[in-house]
Length: 402
Ligand code: NAP
Ligand code: MG
Image 1 (cartoon, helix red, strand yellow):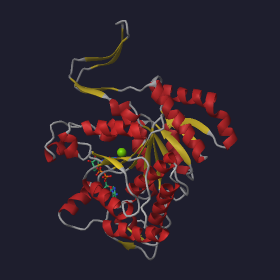
Image 2 (cartoon, helix red, strand yellow; image 1 turned 90 degrees about the vertical axis):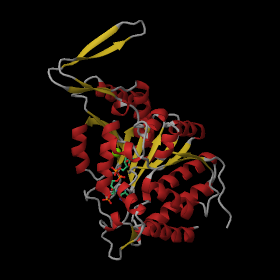
Image 3 (cartoon, helix red, strand yellow; image 1 turned 135 degrees about the horizontal axis):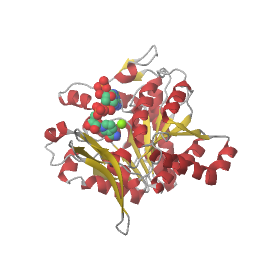
Image 4 (cartoon, protein in one colour; image 1 turned 60 degrees about the horizontal axis):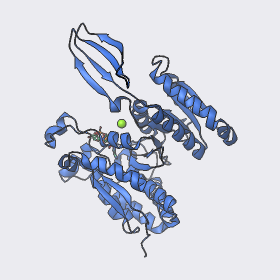
């Protein structure tokens, strides 16, 4: 069989632990037998981030800007216990946070629905896409512990050196403070990505924040969305028969629970982090969620929404068989290959991506699945298989489709 050709390389960002194992198996079993895979490889595994003092993360983000499409494996965000486990010289920042800060933009996360797995909210018959602003707020924070007797202030110095000060708190006991920011341009990019994605998907767009409490910060988000919608998108939305509305985050949560799905829910950075885990868990499994970062300049980074599945990795290291779900990582690859095909005008590559996804869903709907789905599936003929056997079962179907 002739291998499917690629014109431009994907930026490949390797990662950590169990997902790093799956990464290699996905390439070996499902991709390289069919595609003449071209990638520019960046090892974002924690050891290599330590060796390069995290330079590799920055380089991979710059490469993504250059080539336009990246695919990323889950990576460890170091905490205190990782410092000793990996002998780190510094508690390196979250690679996702670094990459998002460089690329800017919005992360869209959509659950992958399969027959036999009913969401915990049974009325959610259609997917809910979470659009997460990928810049700023607490992911770019400055924080400090403050001792009793200290006065904390916000100080802004303008270009002529004039200071504006506002009291944060006069500390009578020990405490903590945090400074966060966002930029009008980034918020506007977020808004436009969401409006464009809603038009692409022909789905309603919801945006929620907490402007009643955060009268300057969250209110700015609300205003920018409203201004851009009125000026650039209102008529397009009307023509497409879709709507946009803003509501408070707590009201949005209540409405989401009562809804049937089938819309895009735009969230600020932290809300999007939390809500996408809630939504993906409610649809079944964290491993059944696609995730793509779309920058305002049209750069795409595909990844899985879950972490490195540490507990499974330790079992794997002890020689035990794991049953780790690789669907989200497979869909990161298929999403990136399809986008690459779209940008390069290589329909064969796009068709391959479609078939890879089809074979994956077909495998689960025919009853072959990993432990997380086995626990949820209502199929009668279901069968729990190992991480590798699952990929091989997909490959059998993929080969038939090709
Ligand atoms: P996690 O890796 O997502 O795993 C949490 C639990 O969810 C697992 O223990 C497992 O449950 C279940 N799970 C997640 N993905 C699964 C899959 N593909 N198949 C089957 N079960 C799955 O989150 P974590 O344990 O909180 O974090 C581990 C590491 O990942 C941390 O170092 C964190 O920094 C990193 N992380 C990275 C990213 C990213 O790069 N995008 C995102 C989140 C976290 P059971 O153990 O019960 O089977
Ligand atoms: Mg998260």
